[in-house]
Each structure stands twice: as structure tokens, then as C-alpha cells.
Image (cartoon, rainbow, N blue to C red):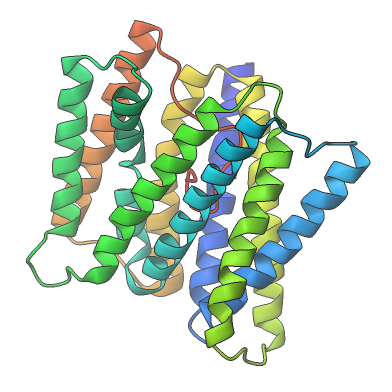
Length: 301
């Protein structure tokens, strides 16, 4: 088995774990306030990352520029977590994941507008077609379109802020340090939000699910780091779209959800457009934007 094949398998395993994390949160949120869930999950995640940093002698000493970018990245992650996870409770899992696959389109446009990166007409055309696919999934003005549909789009823009900030960080900045800061910022945000919502007693299965969610996030993070270091990014990146397959399966098995024909068509258009854009990036020698670690939302997002 080649390194690229192993890396692709690791990427798919990482996305499967992240989908299971979302499934656990969606299931627990039916009986426990979302803010309470995220505070507990991220407290576990941040504690584990802090322990790992102390054992590996990782440092949080960053330059003033990298601190600004890291805090900006944290704002993007926290905003994405709020809007994505809120939508996750109210929107079918597969629909949410399909819309999130449009993130690379927005990141590419953001890189062109704010970082001065060149984007040719073919990739711009793929982005436009991809957005049309998103509109097929959302169907503004029709039944089923509500504020939570808007929340998903808002989360995409926050993920774009996160990813563009990540791209500007200095190479020597530790991914684990950045992830620790980000996880802690998300915990603080939801800690503030939880002040207005009374915490509720948690049955044993909900506590176990939250602990598992934290473990799944950490395991997913480690797997994707390994995948990015083991294989060629251009080869591995297309496998991120397997997240949609996992969302379809888990949505059906756990929640009895299955998208209608138009949603599936829109998702297929988004994936096809994303794959074409990756093909053009590979042909032009452009490195796809794949962060070193998965976000709280599927690189996530």
C-alpha cells in the first residue's frame, strides 16, 4: 500500500470520526443545552491538548503578528462553531454537510480578494456552479428555508476567516498550540452563552457521549495531521468529500433523515465543482488550502 493510499484512508477515517462527533452532539442536544455540551467537550479537549503541550514542551510563545492571527483564527472558529452547531440541531445532517462543502469556494475567493492570489476563469466558473448547487440545497423562499439555513452560510464565512488566518501564520507556529488556543476560545464563548441557560443534570449516556465527542475530535485531529504529512496534499484533498457519504449514512441510521432529490442533486453539483477546482489547482501547481488540523466544524471544517 502506497503512502498516498494510506494517507487517503487516514483522511477518510478522520472525517468519519468528525461525523460521529457531530452525531453525538446532535443526539445529546435533544435533551441537554448546546452551550453546556460544548463547554464540557472543549474543556476536555483543551485539557488534553494542554497536557500534550506540556509533555512535548510545546510553546505558546508567539510573535505579536502570530498572536493577532491566532486570535482572529479563534474568532473564526468560535463564530463557525456557534452558527454551525446551532444549525446542526435543526437541519438534516447531510444537508448541513453538503452546504459546508462550499467552504473551499469561499476560501479561494477570499484568498483572491484579500491575499492577492490569482484565480483563473475556470476556477471562478467552478465556484459559480458550486454556489448554484448550494442554492439547490437551500432553495431560498421555499418551504424548509429558515434562519438556520442562513446560519449554515454564516458558518461558512467564519470558517473562511479561520482558514485565511491559518494560511498567514508563520511556519514555525505549532499546530497543536494554535488548536489549544482555538479550543479554549470556543469554550469561553460557550461558557458566556451558557450563563443565560440553566445547566441540567446529565444522564450517564449523555456524559459518555460528550466524552466520546471530545475524544473523536482529538483523534480526528491526529489522523488528519498524519494524513497531510504522509501523502501528497493534491492526492489526499479530494477525499474530504467523503464527509458527505458519512453524513448521509449517519443521518439515515441515527436520525431517520434522507435528503430529497433536489438536495442530492445540489450536493452532487457542489462536490463535482469542488473536485474540478482541485483538478485545476493541481494542474496549475497551486497547493490546495487544507489546514493542518480539522476545525470544530468539518473541515472540518
